[in-house]
Length: 105
Image (tube, rainbow, N blue to C red; front, top):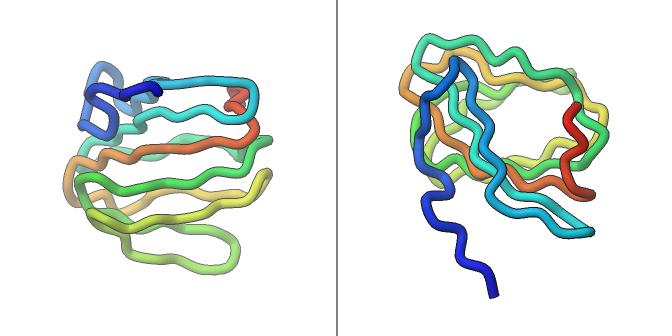
């Protein structure tokens, strides 16, 4: 068993802050934080991704459309799909699950 202390809490060390909380051979988990009014500058990843919104409000934009998101929402983004959070009206904190583990891109 592994307890992830502090996972999903808003952290602001940099404008967009990703902190990895856990990694094994099949997946990784981290917290991604974007301040209110911030710009999400991420690029598509090689991994499938699940976001769990723990705090904040924003809009997730993908080629298939946009969706307002808030606390408790769970979102799936397949590997290589363009996506970004826009209209960040409240400090946004997300638990992010990658499978396979996040490769850094």
